[in-house]
Length: 402
Ligand SMILES: Cc1ncc(COP(=O)(O)O)c(C=O)c1O
Image (cartoon, rainbow, N blue to C red; front, side, top):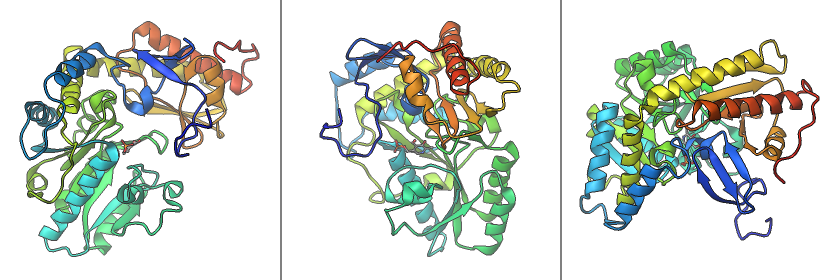
């Protein structure tokens, strides 16, 4: 597989997938794997959800592309739905998370210029992740993502996550700040959950100074944390929200939503995308939102979270190798005492697809559509593999897959 004509940007496990269904993925040899992280928080409804498949099939037979020099019904329907569920006033459609964030960053700069700030700055957090374009990797709080790509983009100021004093100090000393960009739960950074007082405090600081509060909900949005958007759990409303990942359940789509003055900032010619708001992508995303609502999946995400975290908590109570179990909704992090990347190939031998982030955090991002039985099976497998890895269980594992 190493001789594939792909640029070498990913360390990949040697599995070739052919198809999926619900929480299961099947390789070309017919082996079945349980997917604990939904292609990194994307397939929240599970693989090949019938409602999304049907929506894509029907739309493909009607209209696949229509330029943004015109309107199209699929885009209008989705924009209306997104505004209804988010409390925002308008949407810009993109094709990925990084692009949605690029849109937010440009919007914040333009908002600043309109207010007479000639060199606008945006506060971003340590350990954040916002994407791989030049502006979004600069906004990202991880040196490894940036190294080799200098010169970085100017106009970013970094603050520690969950530290309101740091933001207040920047506010006092820097008149160029126009916005704050943060994730309500840092995903790549290790499932770090925002303190309610911090997010609410950011809202107050933004109101006081006339800054935009911008939340990157690319990983936390679309039902993953038990509400459509994590900010709804915190009782704060941002000015700008970015979405992608779970929005299309695997069909590529990103969105930057804005309200109030932020929503009035762009004028024709300021931003654009040939494929953004593509009818196929919009129809898929509309089917996702309708399914979340019709199948009551926001409440289901909360109850599954409770069930899975309780089981994990009792299994690892007092275990020294587990430092913390934390999260919000179906974003669950198990932080270990030491780096644990080797867990990933070990889990593979048991037919379990596991993700490790920030070196020592097992990140579970399961589908919102899991049955109780599937949820218990997933957690029991995670527990068994982690115990064995930590030397807490000496029953050897019998390989289930090559
Ligand atoms: C919070 C957050 N923002 C932005 C991105 C970038 O999204 P994409 O890979 O679709 O560009 C990610 C991807 O992991 C993310 O988790």
